[in-house]
Each structure stands twice: as structure tokens, then as C-alpha cells.
Figure 1 (cartoon, one colour):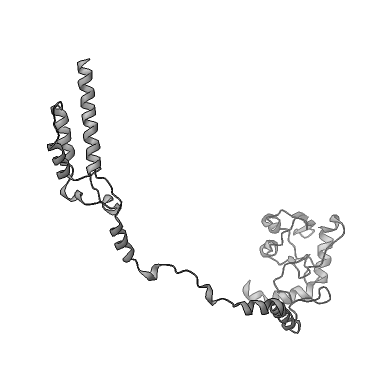
Figure 2 (cartoon, one colour; figure 1 turned 90 degrees about the vertical axis):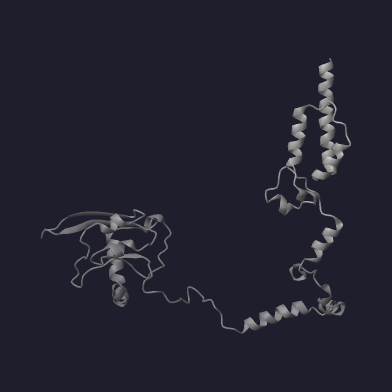
Length: 272
């Protein structure tokens, strides 16, 4: 029981010293003067050495209040931060640059009460909007009346597909199937067989126009300019089956748009 009482007394002594140290602050001189007036009876050697180490970690510079910037410079962990006093706060606020501070908006420069009343009773905003409408009313329109009016198309426009012939009437397609291989949508199907002279000829050339993405890869891959995309963009149908083009349909398109496409091809031959 006596040992327990002595241990509790030592713990109370250490707690009291710690509280006094916290109340006085990080000044080592203040703590030493506090300890000189207190009896250290009952404190063993280990407690005395611990207090001595605690005091030795405090430097003479720690007697001043410590700011946040000083704490970040690696001061001992036993240093206690004290908030700045009123004098320090006033000094810090006087050092601020007035140009860096955002001023309050000046509402005195807004419209006056008379201007607001005139805008309300004379409908100035409405007449201003109507004046803008009147200005644009006499300007030439930017739109066209399609389908009665049609805008110009580029010679490189990619529209409806067609199969071309030579001037002799012979089909240009040699059944190399490069267009079928390069088509990203897999919309082209080709079947071929040998002709009487030993050359290949297409017996089937189908294009599913519902799958086509009009990328133009087929006409770029064709070595003889057989499959092309014309400038016809008006080939809508009522039934889906009408968009499944066969060889006869493609050859008919080629005969119809041959002159137009030959002219466009002549203009673009420098860039091919």
C-alpha cells in the first residue's frame, strides 16, 4: 500500500509539473524559477533526469511567441504555439498591399431611378430588340429553298455508288476484290469467274447501301477506277430492298453519271 501511495504521489507530481510547464510556456528560465520554489521531495533520479532533458530541449529563443512559419522550420516538438497578439495582428494587416485586396463593387455607377423608370414605361428594351430584327429583315438570307435551290457540291463529294465502263463499253472491274477487302463496313460482296479470253470478270457485285458509311475507301483502293462514288445525294427509297444494289444497278448508275464523274476526276487527277 505504501508503494502504491508513493507511485501515485510521483504521478501527481509529474502531472503537476507538466501543467505548470504548459501554463508558463516554453521559456526554460520560467520553468527553472518555478522548480526552484517547489520542493522536489519524493521525485527520484529518473524523474529529475527526465525533467532536465525536457528543459534542455528548450532554447532561449523559444521565449518569444512562435508563428506557423517558425514551426515549419523544424523547431522541437515541445514548442507550444501561441496565437498572435492584437498588436501583431494590427502590424500584419498594415503590411497588406491595398492593390491586392478586392474592392467592393460600386453600385452608385449603375442606372439611376429615372433611367429604370424610363426603361420600364417606354419599353426601350423591346424597341431595341425589334430594331435588331428590322436590321436583319433587309439583309440577304443565308439559307436556300431546298429542293428548289441547291448549293454547290465539292468535286470530291461521296454519294451514290456506280460501276464505270471503258469508252469501248467494256467493264472496268477486274475482280481484284480490293474494294471488298478494304471496306470497313463489309458492305461489298464480289464473285468472279474466268472469261473466254482467260481474264477475270465479275459475275456478282453487290453493295448494301444500308451498311455503307461513304468513307471512299473502295474508290481509293480500285486500281482501274471502276467503283466510284458520284455526286448524287438524292437516292432515298421507300423500301429497304431498293438499297441493295446489284451489278446491273451499279452499271446503270455509271452510264448515267459517267460524264460528270469524268470531269471531276480530271480536276482531281493532280492530287491522286
